[in-house]
Image (cartoon, rainbow, N blue to C red):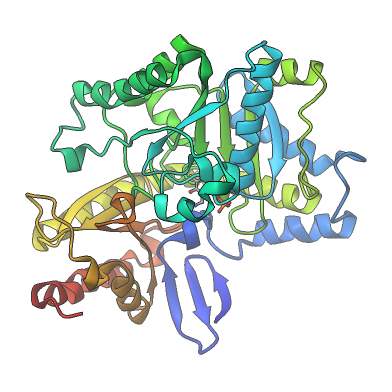
Length: 431
Ligand code: PMP
């Protein structure tokens, strides 16, 4: 039972303190109980907490839209607010379809995504999510969309720094577009750095750029799902900035509201929105969209990121973290891979680093390590990866305020204790 939280720490109702080593689900990027955000929320609450967006715009929503557009890539200045990641993704899909209709391309409806991937739990977002166990029960209720393999070079024995590797995976998209019929494909959606499903998977050299070229060539809209990567976590405000690639539509959430309020947004290319608006409008509405309290908190979160250069700090601390995790990897053969960008970092446990064989599923390592970490006062985020069938990865994503002043030593000791604790477990095959 959570009692309170402040900075990188959380306390349960028994008074035990934990380090929030995953920022919840990669949400609390600026830490908990930030006084400036709380003040901004209090100030907004005194003015108004709700104004229906079809009746009023508010100063808070106008300001947040302007701030977001200023951060977004050039040519993407239209912001549609929502209350979470799934809603943001749904909005990008619907905007893509509406745009195709304005272009006389009603035959375009297929949305290609990757396997594995995670884009949300509402039926539209689930149809493009590459995680069969989560989607399967709803198969009769939705149209599952085509998938291409996520570029897991480390599993396929390929060199992620070799541009030929990026080309190899990106060309799978071209093959899929041709297989499906190029004029039927509406959009391709990609997480710039993979999140929950792939564990901080960084695309190989040249991949993101080639994907952009392919989409442009076939008139397929490119959607960047920055729900987890947006907000500075990877060392740039948007993850895709690492590769200088500009998408057509973007979804953002999690760190955008920083855990203070449910908040997300679709960010769209100006001409896409203009075409849709002049053809009758977007006709998509969530009652709480553009809520003034959420927008005021969002403004304050963005201000704090900028004022304290938290994105830069995340990049710097990400380097330290990666170095330390690689150090652990050298000492513990159980850690088969360390990957990520900035403070979106992960390590994966394997039974055999050379063959990449996963730990036996029966070991349940992913949930056992979570328990061990809890005992050590550390909250971590784990997943069974590789499509939910094998492999255990752990996202190591402390808030971007994480720095030497907030005692990383404690955190690293906890980190080492996971590896120590799980080693005898895996060796003896004890369940
Ligand atoms: N897209 C991505 C990349 C995500 O990581 C998530 C959440 N893990 C979502 C979409 C869905 O967001 P939400 O849970 O806020 O609906």
